Image 1 (cartoon, helix red, strand yellow):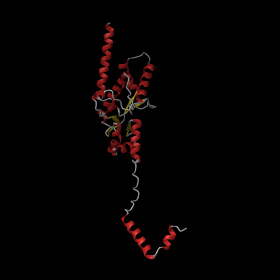
Image 2: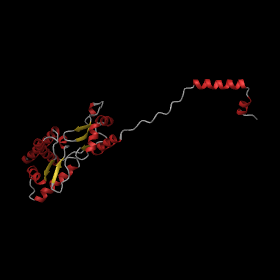
Image 3: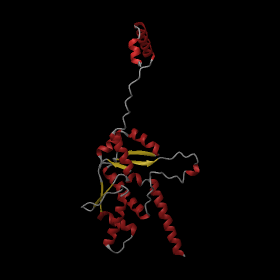
Image 4: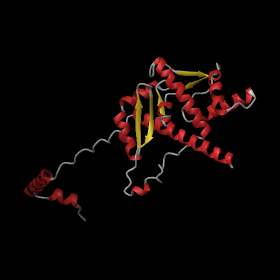
Length: 241
């Protein structure tokens, strides 16, 4: 039984030439296959690291991560594009050396839903009244430091011995020096998680971190003043009863 190869071998020369001609014409009209396009390169590693660190910590300080802060400053547009679908914005304070994330205003069709909207990736951490009052005290010390030395010119350090008398002016004296200090240290430790202060070092000093200039802004301080006035009014009304 003959197969296809036997038939090709037994073809007359003119038929074989005709077959070759048809094959050649078919190949000429067949579009050439383009080589596979190269896969698109992913985001640069520096960009990935910067975005991941911002999502993890919420902020980057130049004094702590100089190279990473520089990368954020140079790739600001690319980082903002990466964050835009997440409804997050990048803020960079080059004078104080801090970059941080904020929640952008959501584009909600129904304005009535605006007030109850919560960002799915950001958990609100409200400060207590005591914590907020201590933040205001620290913000004042930070502002005085910048007035004396200039914005971003040096680290704003404050000793516990300096802070304690101011703290007691607003919080009252418990009658025990150790209790007063422990109360202050406990509040400072709580604020540390918000990126406002550093740990107390071996010299019993703290570093007021530059993020406080943006967290304790005029709007938040006004809200604190309103809360204090409301509390004072409640206490006065209870005393009159």
